[in-house]
Length: 286
Image 1 (tube, rainbow, N blue to C red):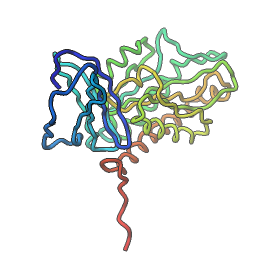
Image 2 (image 1 turned 90 degrees about the vertical axis):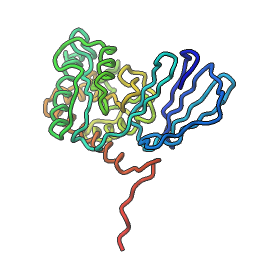
Image 3 (image 1 turned 180 degrees about the horizontal axis):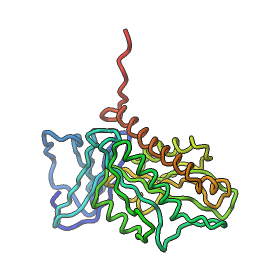
Image 4 (image 1 turned 90 degrees about the horizontal axis):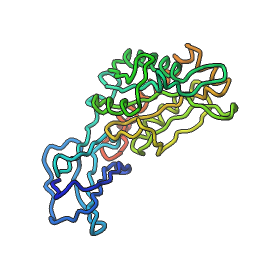
């Protein structure tokens, strides 16, 4: 979209129906048509609105119920919007997954009264999860593989450069009250809620109590729009019962398997939905 200047904009990825809405501030339309190109695989018929004299709204309908990411930038004064198509195969085999072991190095993260450290636990769980994902045929890209310091901003930039199909960030939780316990997942954008919810439901099967699936969460690695992502707070290291589980290698393996199952469930539910959110059903038997 050519503009006279690099104007500020706001984007929203909405659902039911799935669409990307971009508001450009200080812009007024001087045309009454949009050319719809042939052969587009993810975009429907793009249209615009002028909700206010100084707000130009571009609406990009998506052909699939599950959005897989987008990016917006300027080339000179031309605003470019790129929408990612779904992976060719909605299965772990061949999927590229970004995996973030929270904290590390000088950033210890949460710690228990007994000395358990978040940076150690997250790396142990992430390494086991990596093995499970690779065993299923996925390609895994780690933000850290050892006990090193990596700033969150660097992790975000790395993942944006590598551009995975989806991103998982592994953490352990903490509270000022030792009675608080349970597992939780977090997402920022409602379009990526299904991934976080699928993982949450599977991790609950380990026997951990539920602390919730939380939306609009303003965490660095949840901020990327380029791919679906989820933050997983596996359990509370500040709770003695949860801590005992978190420090058990066998339970760490259970967590890894359940998180992997959650991703598979997300992919399965995505496969079951056709364009515009319609659920594909098997033909009725005669």
